[in-house]
Image 1 (cartoon, helix red, strand yellow):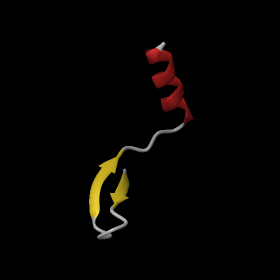
Image 2: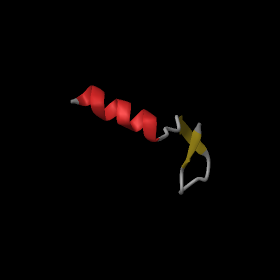
Image 3: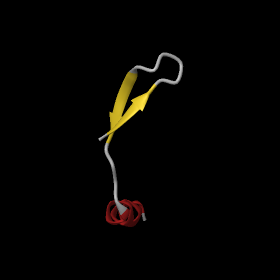
Image 4: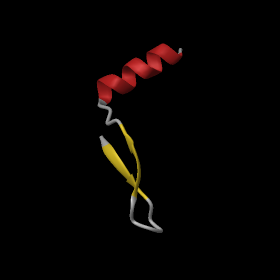
Length: 32
């Protein structure tokens, strides 16, 4: 997971999942 940090307060405001190339290829294929 990647932490999203507010540049204003420097506090963690969220998290997002990391994706590799294979994850991106699957997402693009599913969108088509």
